[in-house]
Image (cartoon, rainbow, N blue to C red; front, top):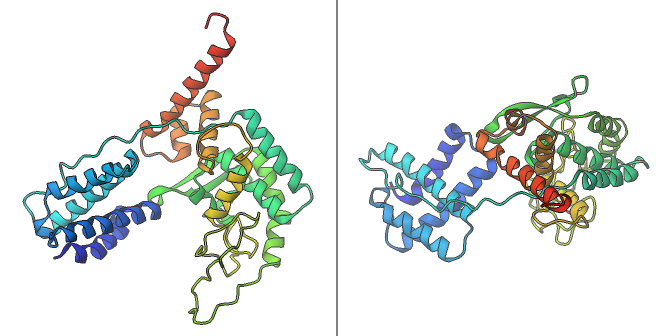
Length: 340
């Protein structure tokens, strides 16, 4: 079997057996497409001729090009998974990627907003939603739920209406690896969700109009966003961004066409809200997830409980928020204590 022939088969293996998230699967296959192209250019085309030094050379080249440690670690993981699958399928005595290692990704503390900053953001959204504009009502529900339940953006946009349990103040979400979990939300988020369900979502569904298919577009194929178009708040979208064309009666969060809200729109919303907020670091929805986790620990929540709420497979992933809390404590001490 050639290396090129193995890629679609490995992709099917990832779909059937590994349970990776769509983003991880896409990243792995993109890395391996590049790796195979590099190997082919050097004359290595057969799976049986693949060696550890080929893989090390590919990682070294990426490091020389300035790839981040996290990207190198992901490439290493993709290559190891691929060669392990190849070795098993071909009955090789030695897995060429078994001893492949990449530099540890540099761990950076996530961006965390203060409680005052979060209150200011939510108050501004509440003022906009007071006029019962359906998009404003939806945006308030989006941010309240992101912060209240510390959700990933992919989990948020995947929520269906039946996933909300208003009586118990919980929502069922599907996280990485298609793992489901039930997470709580608070009374302010419940109020925002109810207002959106009562007055915002019905209006978005009622105003929904399917986009006319362009010439040559097959049935069931999504239309693409034209050049220069924007999302619901005027944030520019890439020219080929796919958009929903059919109203979705199950989806909790809807766009202005009545289809399921996309992650790109949520990114645009949060980035616009954080634009004028002091602080450095990423300005996407993950900043609200980081903020929620840190505020939980600051308030005395148990680390294991926070791990379960965030859907982390490893407690070590959750422990970064203890570093954030400690750093905030040290900073408060340095600025407030007379003997600091």
